[in-house]
Length: 499
Image 1 (cartoon, rainbow, N blue to C red):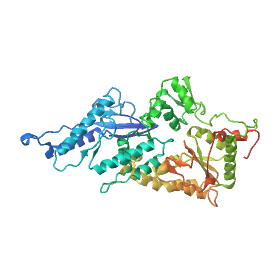
Image 2: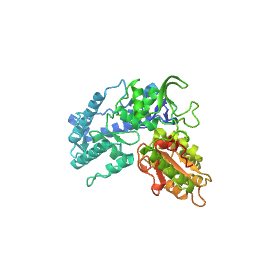
Image 3: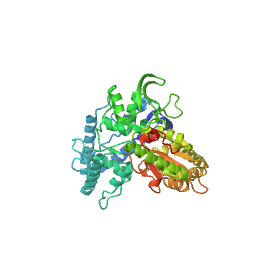
Image 4: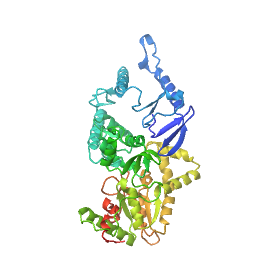
């Protein structure tokens, strides 16, 4: 089973994966799967439970199969490999009900075979779901009940609005009591068990729980962050991004209904039949060159003053906090709707000129340098990023990131002009949030950077968080959420200027 996202091509020897513009190459997994299948068949032949009448043996037939759980398009592989590869819900293959019927029959056969052994290791319990093709297999009634409790917890989380963060999901699932004598599960296995047993929970590509059949409008609103900062997308690419985030959500409608749904969701895109990059959806805020600042409809400072609505008053309070931080060198975390992130960055730099520093770029450069020092192949390190968080490969990657972190901190702390820190995702992914605490303490201090601000695209209001990890800010004076009125400069129309 391969859970790597993206598209794949390859031959009998190697596969090349392409994910979000990055490529890396791995060995063709089929030869290894074939060796495992042969070994499994050999082990099964020695089991007493497979003895036939008069001592005759039933020779098991085990074949290798590669299941690509997150590849949405047909892979471009050699014919010998293609016939051994299946996708999730792949068009042209058995429909879902038929595949589930076969899987159910296989599990039932395994349970019946186990029942013929004197010391059974597992048994079948009540159906895990209401659907006829779902079955719960556990080592004991206590373990079966534990699985059901996980499922109920997942159902409760999936029904929440807005969707709970991946961090909160893991916390809530993790507090379900484990039966006495049962071995502890890893966070990933625990979560997948909860989803499998749940009646109405599915897992997004970002580790969120959501209800299967999530309405297309809801999925589109939640996926707006994956559509931001993209100048042009074909209809198929847009569908692929939403489907990649929420595989079990309702299908997006066809155009022109899709155009209306995008507008309703707040996506800043327009359909063009003859755009510079071909037919597709084009961003309203990214210029044709693909570089430079965004072209948000912005209020001129000396335009007629806007009515003092609650939104305008709130934007003025945000302005006062930012001006104070700029004057005193206070560290400031700035959250903003993902679809407005580019506009917010442009407005921030226009109003408060400062150096832009990408934490993602610094982190990747530092990790690559450290990998070269340790003679670790950089493509191998990149592959580890796609591994499960509890795997040995990912733990090794975390160690590499921890060793590279001091270089990133040193470079940021050596800045001698105000800076806007952007793209902090890897800091949270590699468990380095304490680095941000170090930045907040150094900002404006003697010998430190004169001013450090951090821009965080965040879909929900509330305290700043990066991929579910709460930012270790000092107090309310160290963060604010940029509203649309502030980004559009509406609060300063009429000559009110604080900077």
